[in-house]
Image 1 (spheres, rainbow, N blue to C red):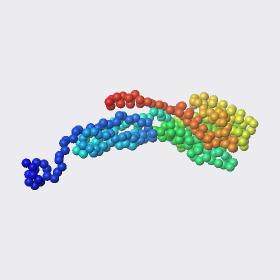
Image 2: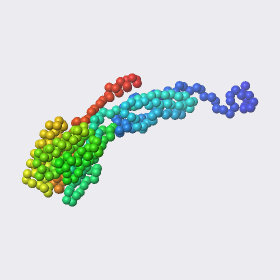
Image 3: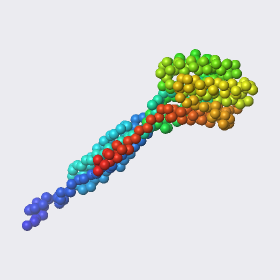
Image 4: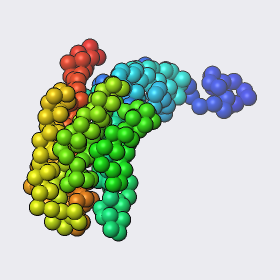
Length: 319
């Protein structure tokens, strides 16, 4: 017998009928995720939260760490927990791997030289490129773009008007102040008509010795050509430059420094990279210098690693 509320009843007065117990709450996480590092701290990894099944909706899903977190290099575990309206819970985990496929074994460079390194495009009147247009700055950006998981420093230590003898005197102080791993040496055009090749070579050797005494590796570059627009241009100037460059190649071989960055050949093949004053590179020329040094740095110091087999094994284990 069933009466209205307040008389006789077999169900709760004023309450909704009790729903049956829900089915068990289930949740499956995504497969392992692998990403390349995009910054020194790792990679910003995005993923979709897993979707629960069963149980009683609505669901609340929380993953730790959450999507869009910067995951460090290596392996991390993400744990996702779902809770339904009946307070049932289900959890699952998956792995996020941030890999670094290529790195450089050297990250701190010193670009040492004269006004070409400093960024001059004209001496009379003096006109300088802004910092971002100089080859040391461009080189640093090129390295950061290629090796986004690492931090780089390329110090611009160009000093206008300096010849190799003066550079040999200045370099020890600069090395002490910057403590680089690699010296990028581009010097020799100033007073090229007056200084003998022997004196220039001796000064360059002194700079090489100074770097090696401090465990700093050196990358030498040849002196670029000049055009007749150069105020000090003579009929013998280009031959003097060629003779000096030949000694630079000999210095690199004798000191076992590896390849020389041959800027003379690069600019001789395209004299439009030299500005109106006949000696200083254009902004595009500065870019080409940066690219030439970048290519040699990559050739010497790049190392590669692969995690393909490890990731395949983890994917199989997850299944």
